[in-house]
Image (cartoon, rainbow, N blue to C red; front, side, top):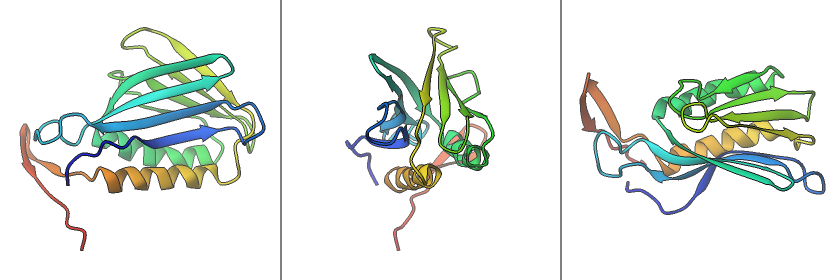
Length: 164
């Protein structure tokens, strides 16, 4: 499967319609290096933070392991506990701090590049927000399946999935 030109959300957390219109998204823009064994499964993305007159965008390249980490982070958030995602130090990180059943603050910290930290409070998350995040992750896996395996340190080969 080749890369796609469609931008899709990996994460989209937003206040319910009719409230603050605050939102935090991680948008997948496409494969980093389609067709290149080493970079094919890396995804070029952007973290987008919106609140009133603020709009901040942070570029980020996600590795397959980052998607696995996001999947592991979701149950923590759903249980009402705080969590950090993308904490490796190579990219901007996201910190999620639940504040009740439908409130959460999300901070993006671009420590490796600009040093900027932006926090967006989400005051009215819709019911089922965690399930929606799982659905978005599933969609990213379907549109951008992992197609390269590391057979030994530094050695890669194609591993195409069939849809049968």
